[in-house]
Length: 254
Ligand SMILES: C[S@@+](CC[C@H](N)C(=O)[O-])C[C@H]1O[C@@H](n2cnc3c(N)ncnc32)[C@H](O)[C@@H]1O
Image (cartoon, rainbow, N blue to C red; front, side):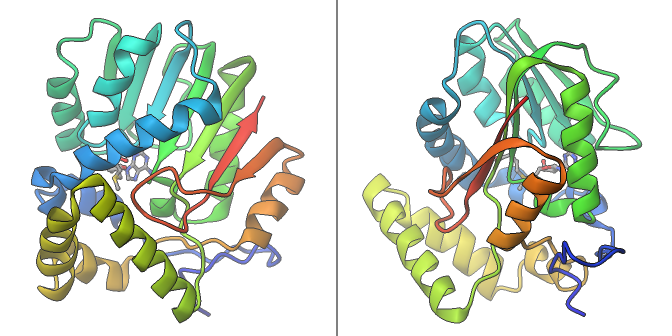
């Protein structure tokens, strides 16, 4: 069994070794990376049309990281709750959003699929580059059902940057398209320096850690099966909304 691959058909979903929470809690490469800021800008420019962002939106972002997306988003929405499991990133997000009075940043403790400790009536939920660190697909199902309980009718939930299982040719195509985007947007050097030299070829901490604590990887079939199992009003957003080509999104309407 490949622990990183979800199998929606099996009764007992494969568990990946836990540990990502621990990884994100420590002082690591990403806390000082400029790539996340660039990624936040790319996502912000792309996702607005997909979710039809409204000034009256009350937003919950989960896995806020450094908070660059939240600081871009805050002036365009009524309120924003940002959550992360890592105290380090909670502090960074607070710092980045200190000028926005409508932003609340909190740490998720315990069950990270349960958001009942937040206020109710959210109209928009954003999960950007985070569900791949969940342990299995059941947790994603729980998360969607728990989000629904605190959602206003008609609220949207977007899971973005979903890693798909890829053959070598597809991976090559994704890498090429990511590089072309970097070239077009003027961050190719940073992508090469941070993403390739510092993090990949140097055996960076993310890569080393990822050898044991695999991230979840999805197939399109599994996403479709998840939509069916939960009877969701949902669509797969085929184009990537982040700097990572070949990573679709899942848009749910409650
Ligand atoms: C790859 S970063 C993405 C950060 C941000 N969303 C972005 O796109 O720049 C993943 C973030 O999710 C947080 N995280 C990891 N697992 C989580 C979980 N189960 N629930 C909430 N946050 C989590 C990490 O601490 C980290 O800040």
